[in-house]
Amino acid sequence: MRTVLFGALICLGACAQGVTDKGDTDGTTDGTTDSDLAGVDTDLLGECDTTNEDCAPGVRGCGGQGSTMLPGSDCLACHTAGGRAPEWTAAGTIFTDASGLSPAKNVTVTITDKDGNIAAVNSNSAGNFYTTRSLNFPITVEIEKNGVKKQMASAVDSGGCNACHSCSGEAGGKLFAP
Image (cartoon, rainbow, N blue to C red; front, top):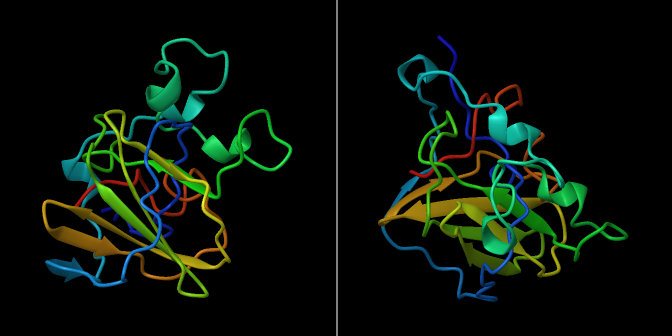
């Protein structure tokens, strides 16, 4: 059975706009924390949806403009220094399960860089999130939905997500809410 590993959390890219960067927080956490990060059996979830991985600027049927833009695609393909869009340091899409069939909205994503700087963002109605906050890599990430939290197993050197959180990526499936 294939297991979904909750590896490099801030990975499933999605060109999102309109998500608010909350800036610094005090670094405290509430609720339960799932740092074990044991995966789920993807056989129970069905097939992983690769459709949204093919989304790119100019491709029809991938979502609208602004905050719903291209959920599941690689945000940092455009949102990088010298790219076609404003630069983001971390961005992605959160789904309700590893198959990537439905977006998960109102998930809090807390990104901590190697110097302890924190950026906290929320996923929007398309599951998209991003930050422009300066980050010193590597970063660690925690996501929280309804008081339940998941933490990354290890730090990562990229704020782009498709490399790991895609159907064929290292994580074995989409980034999904706890």
